[in-house]
Length: 89
Image 1 (cartoon, rainbow, N blue to C red):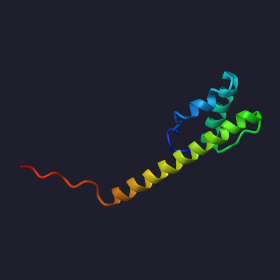
Image 2: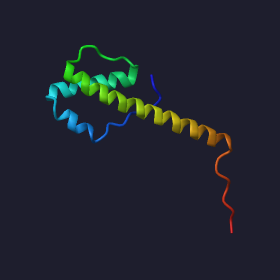
Image 3: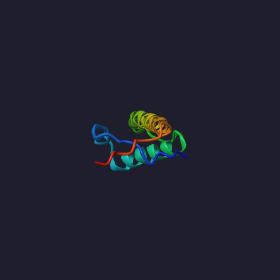
Image 4: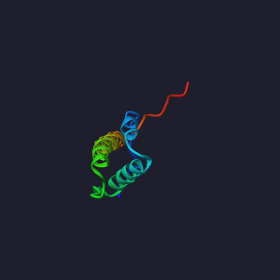
């Protein structure tokens, strides 16, 4: 399980979801959450759902990569001892 609390779903994705029925969109969202939580790619999606899922999957992977980069940057900064105390006047 990931420590990351979530992933970004971009506004541009709404155009993809508009092409799906509510039922199809729900299956894609559930597939995205499953992939984010376990890394498992569901095989039960219809072709159009799999196309949309594949695009969302790329967004998830970019989000995870960005999170890891920020974590690493923060870890390195923490090793430096943090921000120096402010001088009092």
